[in-house]
Image (tube, rainbow, N blue to C red):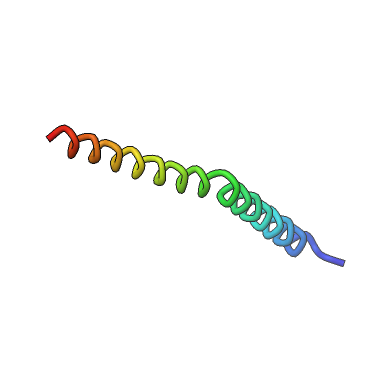
Length: 57
């Protein structure tokens, strides 16, 4: 059986591990795709503006 200090350490470890797990899932499913999609969209807009500027000259 666990005494109180071992039990509280286990609970703290599981809490931190669970937070890290859900943070990783959140980053991989929402933040990274948003970041990549935004980068692709910004590059597309910059290339389109450069093409319009080249045609205008």
